[in-house]
Length: 107
Image 1 (cartoon, rainbow, N blue to C red):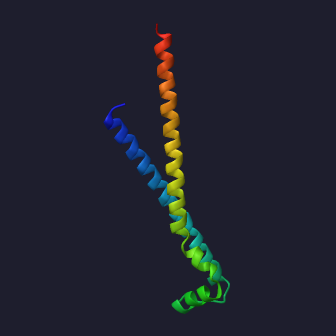
Image 2: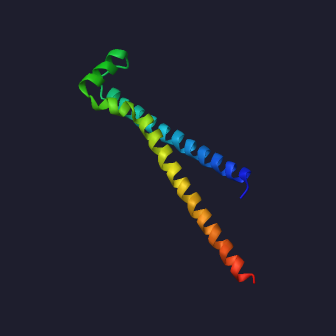
Image 3: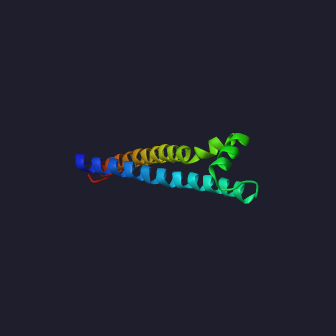
């Protein structure tokens, strides 16, 4: 395989990992919006800074919810990168075995 082909595959792995990271952050952001919507629809809170402060003081787990987009983006990035690397290794192993089969069956 040429150096240009390897660079193209590496770029593909890199781009695919970022694509999944963006999707993961959007899912995390959706969860944050859903959580705040549930709090504000409960008729206990108005949409203002004091309500946000009150929500965080009364429910400390909301701090974890606020970091969900970052956590899901990092998790999706690493998981997708590991999956893509494993796929690449399997493909290269299969390709080398096919070359061996072709070399010994062409004679």
